Image 1 (cartoon, rainbow, N blue to C red):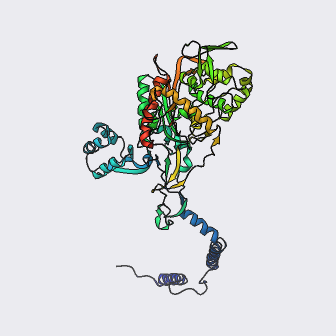
Image 2: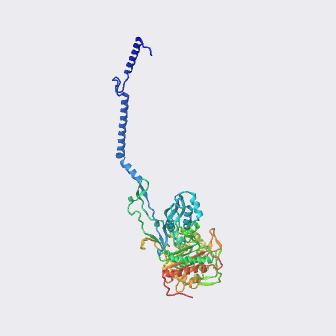
Image 3: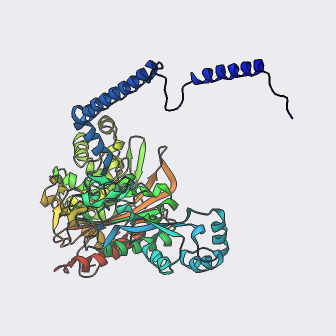
Length: 608
């Protein structure tokens, strides 16, 4: 039992408890705030005022920025937004097709596809898929499996896949294949008219032929339009202007006749094979307007596979290469002499077989004794001496001026590309050197292109006018109505019609009685002239044993209109002459030309 406290200890303990109660009673209690302590201290108010101030400044700044964007810069920003939403689009426009004068297709754009494969999307085994598509695209099963295993996606499997092959692949309904469409230039005739039409490269730019020279006519002028673009970049067709994808139906029509072109090529290739020739060409011209009905060159290339061809073949050598025409130029010289009154049609000249001009001795191609020849007989026998005698009656200065009038030493104005200028000695050298007029009289010592020789002979056929050789007729529509044709220079009168008719009649005796007998066709009067010239060397002089054989014909003699020319470069063999190599080609071409152009038989023919 505890011991009771004394009065003194009890009183002290009570005082201690009283002091403790007083001490704790001074502390603020919840719900009983001491009135001496402030409810909102001054530091809290300042913070609140600061926050409200920042908010107000921000609101004012935002309001000003909105005013600046909406009012001050509104138009400028709206225009910028439209520019971001719109895009300039120039839709693909196919090149215009090229057709011959019979509307047969020579060149056209056709859709092709790049074939991509994504093996990760295959729903069949790679072996099964390779087995199905291999025969269609021409690839072995094992090769296809290796390709499939090289990547999981985005493999270019084949380029320029035709529509037919693409349709076969699509019909298999295989997952994991993607067809990207594009367009490719296609030449249905392969190499038949390659030297005239040319080809386009991967950038769809013409590189040869009319594909190059007539680029502006072949390229359709597709308009650039502005289209709206969605947020993901996709074009929105509902904003496209009406009819912006429409294109015209115009085609570029040539003067070339496919049928004649094919027959001329066959005749040329036959003779080139027979005589193992280096190259050859055939040209058929309508002398009335200069339109070319056929222009064949061999060897040539396939424009559908131009990358595999020798680049030297891309330039048509009938307009891009020079040669010495030899005896085929003799009728032109006769026309010059007749036009100037230096000779008369019934004149005759001595031909001793050789002639001395300064230090040079000129001989005939064949050894002959002394003879006297008429002008017609000079052409028939292709007498070099006779031609020298004829042109010696003409002053060299006058002779030279006439050569310039004919365009020698200049380019032929034509719509075929890469034409080159002929070569003619300077006037001073021609006049001061006796040998220059002498060699020119039988077609040597100067050079021109085969096309220029045909142009000059066309002047003999059409009454003396120098016309412009061309292969482009113009742009035609689906109903073959002409919409545009290239303006041609006015024909230039060179000879009188009387002179040219006399020369053509003399040329007729070459076919009926002379070296051109191989070109005779029963019932038709044909004038012609053979040529067998030495081949000039690029380093000067002539290449030993090399020759160029040619033959030019004009028909019908009673009403001349057509010029047919064949040239064969470096034929082999002892019997390789213009009369044996080129004349048979011309005969075959004329036989094809007669029914195509419906040339009636002559009322009077000259036969032996």
